Image (cartoon, rainbow over all chains, first blue to last red; front, side):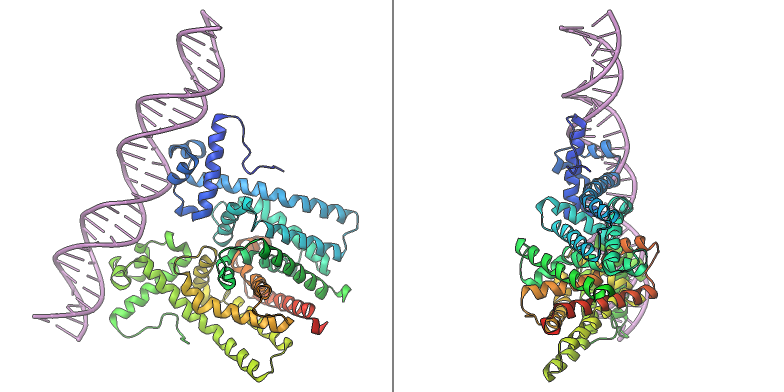
Length: 227
Length: 227
DNA sequence: TCTTTTTATACGTTCGTTTGACTTTATTCA
DNA sequence: TGAATAAAGTCAAACGAACGTATAAAAAGA
């Protein structure tokens, strides 16, 4: 697991490369792949336009490198939860109630990304990939979406006594994730409904509590063993 | 409430206008606003490039006309549910259980749009507006998103005994909608998780049942009067 | 004839990419 | 160590292609 998004080295070229990646992340996030021109990315990075071709080959490969960096960075975030869950599962101490707690923790982690300034730019790129995947979507899926989604599905299966491999459980897990995604992807709608300009920490707290309540209700309500 | 998306008239010019709107809806949906060029939209409509300027002024106004048509069309879909709910509310026969049923009906209606070939193109345009709103987003919000969201919030408030005007209830309603949006906006992720190429009728049925279960569990689990 | 609609063509801008010269940094070898 | 050589990095300028838009003439309909 890496700590920094785009780890830097003292090398001259590596630093320019890193500046370009950070600038590309910002511009791609702000304006999308097509509307972010290589010229403004280079300007943002304090580099020449030709540097992109020099370091990455072309614009598309630069974008792929950004996605790869995001996948490795965020993928590491959830690996901690995954390891913890698998450890308890192996020890046989992961019952329905504990699984529900893992689900809550995962959704809160996902939710946390919506508000931390750290992830502001990453979120925009990811949301765009979710709603209209590029050719490099596979990079995000393989290293982050798939393992995270699979973990959540296992937890849902454990929490309500359903087969984690069945389509129903996969779909159910997906629906539960949607409760978080709504605040990222339909952001403008909820902002207008609340009559505010941006979601603050107080809203993050409210949403976290609401999601906990929903998870609790669904897990208790649907598990035949707990009713 | 209008039946057709872009109502046609026998007029010569109106038909060309309508062809352009339909072609624009398709292209904007498939490739997004920027990647859909006015030339290919005109080709798709069997019209000349200059026809867009002639009938709509410019590309942006054409796009706004498409959004306006969508808002009027979909807005009408939910007006039936809204009228029904308000009628029962006025009659005093809208208790928590009935409100929960209205919520289920709304989510199923929203879900239905994901699968009918009729709405395939509309969905793409709407999802793009949700994740990165254009200057014309207000057209969608005013005539369709706002009334629908408000109705759902009222039903959630009634179903679990919460103030429909409180931020918590608004946020809760939004989270519940997210369960449907996930299948539209994070479509590629769920497709890969299921190992399929597209969601079919059998998945629509599963998802509908899952959402019913979740709504039921949340409404029952959170309403102090029913526990 | 007069208005409405359609057409081909051109304009100016911006895009991603390429080129070749220039400067800086690293390596080699006397 | 220090000059010579190679490699790595930077830069301004230009290329062809695609874009949205504008124009003015031709065609069609009233």
